[in-house]
Image 1: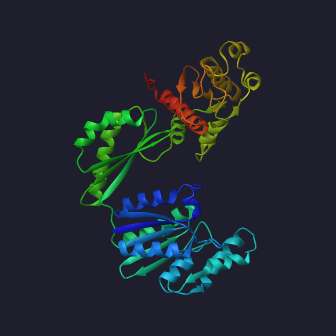
Image 2: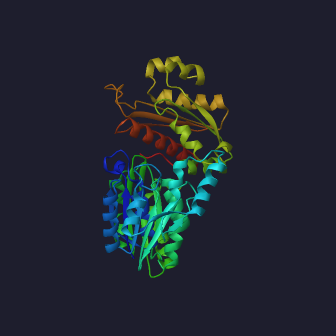
Image 3: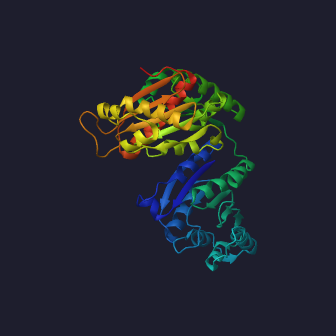
Length: 416
């Protein structure tokens, strides 16, 4: 089954917004066994949307559009597809009742403009929007299908998982390729490739895709077979062999985040954590608290951006700051020890560094970061030399700090 994706909106064309929807839909359609033959982005213009949809229906069995389903002046997708299929827009009372109910649930009056959300092309099948007000639409033309979905990622994903995916599976679309994920951190893409190159050449019916980012490299392992079960068996076997080659840089075999893995390890040890941050400004604490239930093991932390607060709040020694500076192995370790004591936790984790773009010196350039973890009987410190802009350095520093704690909890040696 061939599929085409059409994403709609000027913001996707002028670079003000990254097109996350196309990547998500491409991945999900591929995992279902469809072949994505084209991805197109068009502006919020009726003529452009209609032309793109018409081309899609000529080339593909399934066309999915995203965006332009709201109630403002630039939401023109319904008008475009109504014209394409020769339909009039009519009021759907059932959809209008659902829109009203959503506002009533929040104890808000429904603005009259939202009636437009219930104006649907005649004969189109509405798709329930469990995360918003504007419904999606399903059109059928012969054997071809067109799904018209909202552009808000949360709404799009909910609609795809709850309606589109089951609908396509009901039409006989079955995945003959199964994907498994390996998540790594601390090892560059080139070295990963070098370590597994010979192995991947020998793996039958397996494809490996590299997905690098600031925080690490994910590997998408796709196994193929004559049936979904056979493909899954191939994917899992290949995943295991590849992961074994990359230990101890693998922190998850699946979609788990590093903070979730660390939280699991702390829970298994019945241990608690607190953090002290300087250059990352609270991002480490934010990562930890993204995990539901993290209050069981994460007790809090401090952002000691100034030397004065490093001394007053967590007991960093004035002598250490004077002799070694705020960005140093000694200060990072004293931050970890100090926050552990202050918060009465089993472990303290700390970050201090130069995130840039200014503030660097010849001895301590932008990108120099020290991370430290301290427990009752063990402690570790690592120096990092990170590259990129301020945001990239901060994200990479947090990831490295979490990995330092993971290695300590698992008693894994630090990389040489």
